[in-house]
Image (cartoon, rainbow, N blue to C red):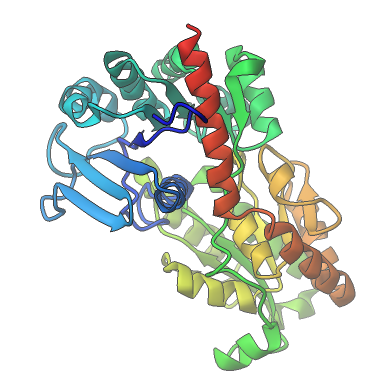
Length: 416
C-alpha cells in the first residue's frame, strides 16, 4: 500500500460466476465481463497489480493467464469443471472462497462484482483484514420492482445476500446517481459508503462513422430504415418490444414494410434459453420474416460495423444499471431509443442524443422510433451530440474514479 495517497499496490477482483475471458453476449457473459476486463486493464496500466479470481469452468483454460500487462486471471476450483446453473452457484460460494483465500494473501484490497462474488469477497476481505469494495451490477430488489409479468423473480436468498454485502462493504460503487439512490432506497446504504463510478466505453473500437460509406462497404440497401438491437436474448432485455413496435409501424404505414428492417443481434442466455423461440413465434405471428433479421452474437469489431449501418439503436430493457450498448451506439454517432429506467437515464440524454420511452407499450415505442426514422435532420443532430456525449465515458476516467473509491475504502476500513 502506498501510504501517501492510499492507492493499493495489489487488488483482488472477484468475479466468481463469469470470467473476463468469456465472450460478451454469449451465455451469461455481458456488460459485467467487459466492465471487469476493461477496468482491470486500465488499473494495470497505472501500475496496479490486479488478480481476477473466477470459478474454473474450462479444463483447457490455464490456471493463470495474463491477458494484459499487470493483470492475471486465476481459475479457482469450485464444483465441477464445467458450466453449472445459476441456481447451483450459491452452493459453491464456500468452496470457491476456501480455495481463493491463499490467492488473496498479500493483496491490499478486494473488489467484488455481483452478489455471489460479494459473498465470497466479504469473507476473503475479513480474512485478509483489507478493505472490501463491491459493485452490484444488478440488484435483486430493483429487478423485482421493474420485472415484467412473466419474468422470473429474483430469489429471497439473493436479496438477503445483497443486504449482507451492503452491511459489510467499506465502499459500494454505483454506475450512476440513480443506482446510488437505489442502494439507499432498497438496501439502506449509507451516503458515505457510496462512490459513483461510471463505466466506460471502448472509444478505440467504437467511434463516429459515416453511415452511407458503411452501407456501401457492406452491401446494405442505402434506402433501408434500420433499427438495431444488441444484447442477450432474454425477457429482461425485451427485444420482443421492438418486434411489436415494428409490427405497429407497418400497421400504421404498410408501405414502410419495403424499407424497415429490425436487426436483432444476440444469443440465448441461461434459464431464458428458450426465449429465442418466443421471438421467432412473434415474428411469424406478425408475418415479419421479411422485416426482421436475427443474428447470433458478434465480436466487438463486427458490432461496430452494425452500429455504423443502423439508423437508430433500441434498448428496451426493463432495467439496466448502466447500459453499455447505448454508449457503444452513441460512440459511433448513432441515436438511441431506450427505456426511461435506471442507468439508461444517464447513458442517454433524452431529447438530445436520443429518446427515452416510459414503459414498454409497443405504440409508444413505435412513436419514438418513427420520430427518429422519419426526421433525418433530427437523427443527424442526435448522432452528433451522441458521439460527444459518449466521448466523456472513457475507461481511463473509470479507472481514475475506481482509485478514488479505493482510497475512500482504505480510509473507511482504517476507521472501523
